[in-house]
Image (cartoon, rainbow, N blue to C red; front, side, top):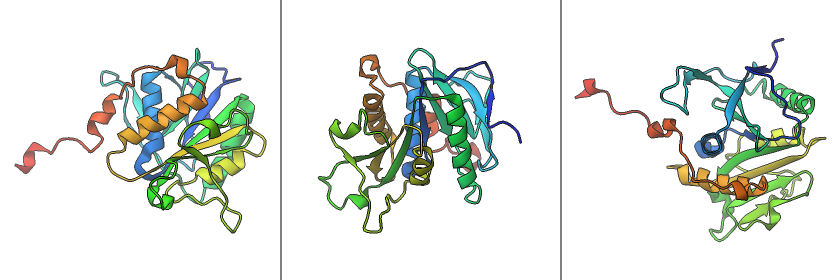
Length: 239
């Protein structure tokens, strides 16, 4: 079987914090990773291949002048800040998703990353009360827990002993696998579908707090691909 991570250069992720976005409502996790990559100048170091990932290909989403292509899943890193992220731009085959979780878990152990942060988003109608906290988390270590961060609340199990967050995709399943022996945090935001760019900026702010990167706070830079967040211009032929 082909290796899951195909590195374009020699890389050592020992001691890094790794961010993984789940396919969730509004694509807020992916938008948040977009902001992280562009604002903090993370560089692509590997493409990620797995039979569970539905293939897709496109132009470089971060540089309109680049001749490189992007694929469905890629790994970015910043060596100075010791952070890395997987950008997942496609969905998973439900029949192979469990194998994907297990393979991610195995690879993260092999790469010796310090901590994994899973990003997700969920439908805000689950709040039932607009005064409730807008962000949620699960932390396998309870060390540097985001519980002290304003407007962030720990998820609670339901009466069946399960975590239920509608719209959050595979986040709970991935968290359950990775947190077996690795330090893992699930962080997300309750949102409504629409223009979710402000939600991504808000989730990035919480993520930076979790990563303890406030001192490196910068003006947020949006990627060039966001110019077409609602699609491209209408074709001239329709007029």
